[in-house]
Amino acid sequence: MPKSEEDEAVDTLKSYANIRTISKPGVKSEDEKIHEAAEALEKLKSKPVEMASTSVHRTGNSRRTRHKRRRHTRRKSVRKTVKRKHHH
Image (cartoon, rainbow, N blue to C red):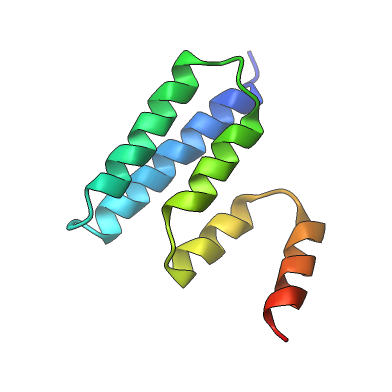
């Protein structure tokens, strides 16, 4: 049985939570937010995947994690335009 996009979103959310837990042991509230988002996603399978991606984008704000997160999105064209906008 192939994984649905919702399942993939849950997996990526959980992996983000794990990465943050390992890299920043001091930060707990962010991790919990991500875990809650993942659990909420599992309960509400009917929600569109976009809801998950926005919550992921909002949580971290260090430059490195933003870059890592960006690499996981499948929309290359968006990435290009964002790059162009940021480097004036």
